[in-house]
Length: 288
Image (cartoon, rainbow, N blue to C red; front, side):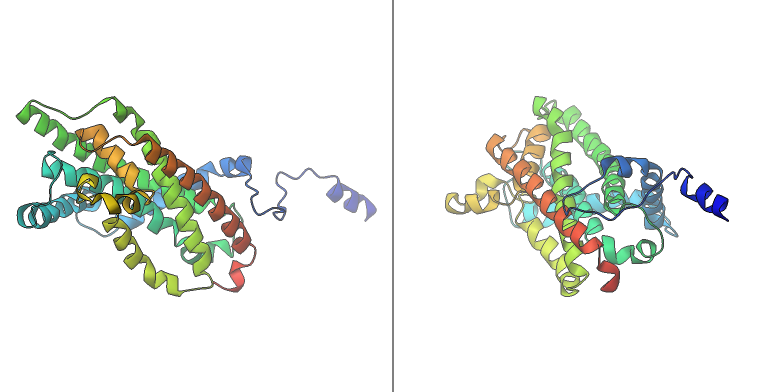
């Protein structure tokens, strides 16, 4: 009997699960060790989204094209809103592609606890794996829509023999990283709060729509009255969408101060999000 106890105590465990000690604690090595699970979640999200659909991933292209057509008819043909000299189709499509990535990250991560309560209650894995997988799966969506944007941009370049693409286009991966961080941080804050305050779920879609209209997607910042322009640029997504359009179309301005503000806001919101996420993670099964 003693020999059996000694053999158990001397055995080498492959994994030791310990409770988190700090609210800002992130075990990057542990998250990396679950990279196969992240890949599985990314594949699951992609397949589940278009399961039993006829057109499948083509909806990634149909969505922004339909939105661009509606914006063109309403805001350009009827409302006559300026696009700062850029072709209206390109102006709207570029804004939609950038916004769609941010909105998808925000909406996806905001339901982390509620959507995965069944899995979280049965199997252990780092909970941040789920929202990270959401960010990556949405990157696939962005890649498909960005290829569409480049195709339309190439067509206009051939027709007009001009192009607005400039060297700042090399910074597009940085714009995406900051957008992902803002969506990730805001999303996990909402996810943590909705475990207790379910009203936030009802406000999400309304809030995202308001945020979109506060972002210069269907209008350029230049047409906003000078007295109110500061309020538009306080929106951390606005400088990123403006920079995205400037890089591809040459319209608007490259606002380095605005980009630095967006970057600082992204770091802040991610830290706050991780703090709340780690705090709620310890007790959310009692309230979700």
